[in-house]
Length: 286
Image (cartoon, helix red, strand yellow):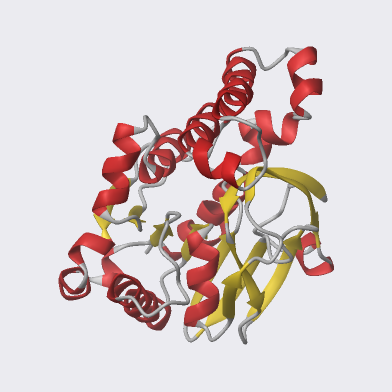
């Protein structure tokens, strides 16, 4: 399934260069590539640019004609949005300009935190610690059940996740669409100035293969934080995820990992991304 429209999309990779180099050394997929995989399948005629906003900083602000794009996508990041950091400030200024221009945005993980903070919400370290691998039992709110972002999504579902921070105060113009026991804000719509930002704390763009790679790369902190007894245990778990990715019909692996169609089926897992294209991006094409 795909659409024949030709939107122009800009993806902001929000990781510093050193972090991206660590991805390569650790055999981890780059988050902008995961968005590009989705776009190439669903809107194959789209024009897609990737900007490394942390590297280019103020040059991005000066060099981008904001209205030349039909939509912006924000990746995750290993930066912390509530500390004074020029690498964060340049992104906040860009998001402020996009809200003013009224071009729709989508973002996962870092994106939901960016959307909230720019519109005067609050993000803090999650006192429950890291949420990793799969966010369990995400539930739509009443607003979520009526939202276009979650249209077609099950009322309760799981999603890929890896984060330490969370939105703790919704911004004015923010509407909570979904949450779970670990993280109260898992899906959010922010209307600010002239723009709309649809955001999730979880990652619809990931799949089991990519999450297994990320978990393997985070083996040491996952052991240190008490989720596993050893790095070998992490690798065993990630190996099972790899195997289920290759054999998604394996009932044994599904039961062992407690993974269902909401994770394995891209038609369910990526519903938010398709909705963003269908309901926010495409209607704005002149």
